[in-house]
Length: 118
Image (cartoon, rainbow, N blue to C red):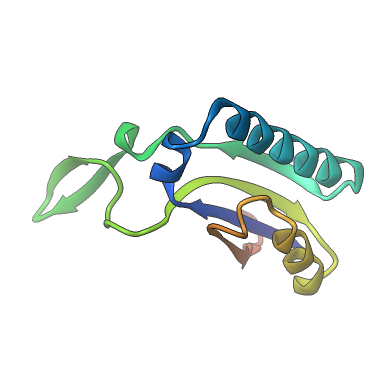
C-alpha cells in the first residue's frame, strides 16, 4: 500500500537557526531520506518552498480567485512530503516517527486512495 507522509513544522523556526543548526538539520533529513531509499520504501519525496511563495486558487460563483499563501493560517506549515510503499499503516507510522521534524512539528500519515483505472 502507498502512504503519503505530509511533513509539517513551524516555518519561522528555521529562520532562527544558526548555520550550524541548519547544517545539522539538513544532514538529518538526508540521513532519513537515505534510510527510506535503502529500505526500498520511498517512491517520491520533495521539500517545498516557504509559504510566502504559495498561491491558493478558488472558484466562487464561477470566478477564479487567487490569493497569496496557503489557504489557512496555522501554527505549522506543510514543508514537504514523502510517498512510501509500506506493507501496512504500522510500518508507515514507524517511518513517520523517525522523521527529523517530529520533536518540533508533526507528520501526517495518509493512505493513498487507490482508484482503479486512474
